[in-house]
Length: 385
Image 1: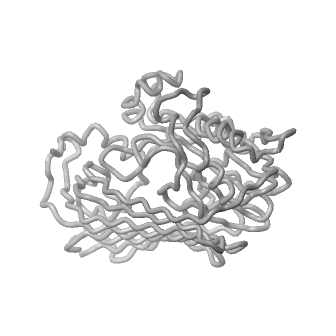
Image 2: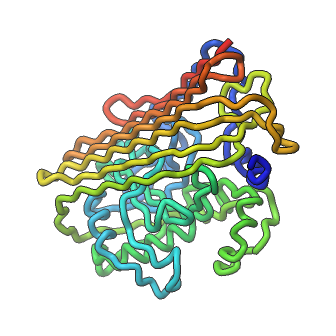
Image 3: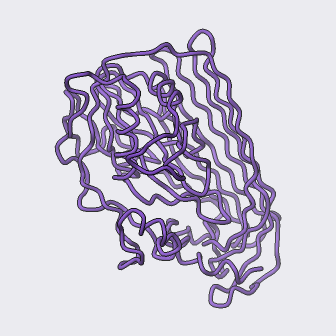
């Protein structure tokens, strides 16, 4: 059971941040909160930071590759994309290109524009199921423009985490569908921004994940085998700017999505490593439930909850065999987003707790992100003795 997960161990290690070493009673990790991240760029008459952030710092998470001017209501974009069918001859007739749009389950992020400051992605959309492959779109509305990131990603087997595969394919895919909506200006529907993000690539794909999708890369004209580890994700640095000139009525809506992911993978221990090996085998169900409501008065509310009761076993990463006794871990995650006219807030909280919390290699992690009137982000880790 343990050995089967070793093929992805290196990939998951590459995707994860270096875990805290543990051993301390209390570890507070707050990013360097910034009033305005730099560098700012000017696009469509607005100064903006051309990346998204997962922690309100200047560490860019995803590049801004879509910008909306004119009508910048994310609920209008949601309504229009939901109305489209999956017929896209330019991309092919088969999955994942025959998908239809729906509300996405995804981590919360923030973007910066002036004069709005930090704004959250209250509206997240996906084309394709949670896994294995999907297009994921986050929309960040503000007073002048709405910035966005789109990416094509794969669900890492045996986990609830996704790995970005392409920025450019997703930008082209969303552009194709936005033209289909009929919302864009007839004479100048879109235009390219200057180069605003890192080129010729941004972030990377661990080779073991890239190589596991060989037939997909062949279909897209990319190398079938990774030539670097991680394989760079191409990024031309240019965002597509849409001139949204038309609108449509936003209809009342109420959608719930609920399913279970079986976590079954060796992963780097994310916190309180202590004197352990640094790797654990995690097994058990994680239940995910999301509800998205657009009420008759136009108010939008999105709530998400994930709950897992897991078995954790320390492992020897060289063999995949057990390196200690198994124990229990409880995980929970809660998100909430609201849009009500000009008012918007987005928040998330994640808790991971190892039981019993004894020894320096077991503990509790709580992390949070709040984007609204008082933006805040941070992590608190407590390790046992």
